[in-house]
Length: 92
View 1 (tube, rainbow, N blue to C red):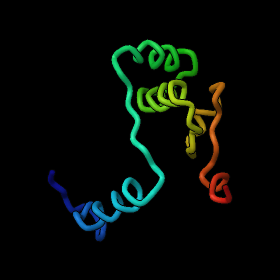
View 2 (view 1 turned 60 degrees about the vertical axis):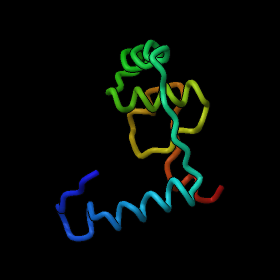
View 3 (view 1 turned 45 degrees about the vertical axis):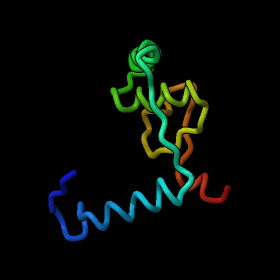
View 4 (view 1 turned 30 degrees about the horizontal axis):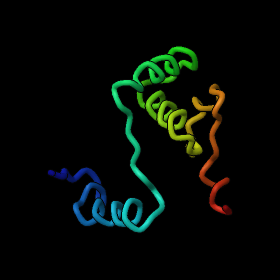
């Protein structure tokens, strides 16, 4: 793995390491993935809701595993799953 320096404090190994520790190790974030069989749902969502590939991936994971979508991205407002803003889950 390599890192490039773009701005002070950004993309430094220590910053990246702290992020991974805070989010994936100490936090309550879990990684989820899609299998080849899930690609039909991904493509259907992309077309139906006019989502780009990244948003369609997130939508397909949510459809498969049923987590809430937490995002600032207004593209999810066009879907039947909707989304929560980060501030909405801070008090939960």
